[in-house]
Amino acid sequence: MDNIRPIRNDEDLAWAIGEVEQYFDVPPDFGTPQADRFDILSALIEAYEDRYYPIEAPEPIELIKAHMEMMGRKQSDLADLFNSKSRASEILNRRRALTVDMIHKLHKEWGIPADSLVQPYHLVTEAA
Image (cartoon, rainbow, N blue to C red; front, side, top):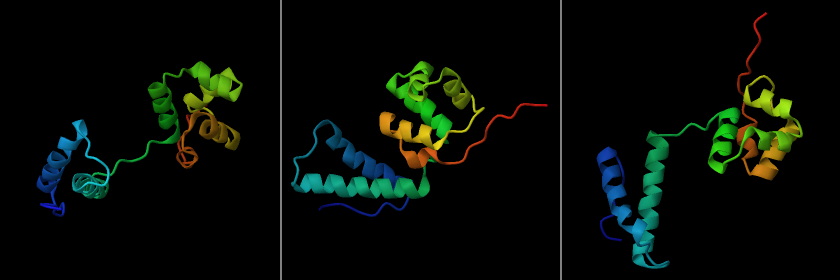
């Protein structure tokens, strides 16, 4: 593997990204030295970014909303999943917490990671 080095700073990161970009349009053949180089550089980039630029997981309701947007789903689809229009509205508006059954359905039917749905989040409280 020629010219592979640790990524210690943003300049090294930019170099590594530049090196792997060439493989985006024409991926290297599996098992070749170029494929190994791509894999190693990609792992180094990921490790550096995870350490210095971590991405916080969205809280459960934001995750559901993002998933719905990406998949072209509407509140009515969530209502169908929960068998209740009002429950879907209450969940999306943070007036009711997700139940274990809801989390299970979101995970099983929509493929949203259950461990991300069980994270605590704030509900909207009504002013008295």
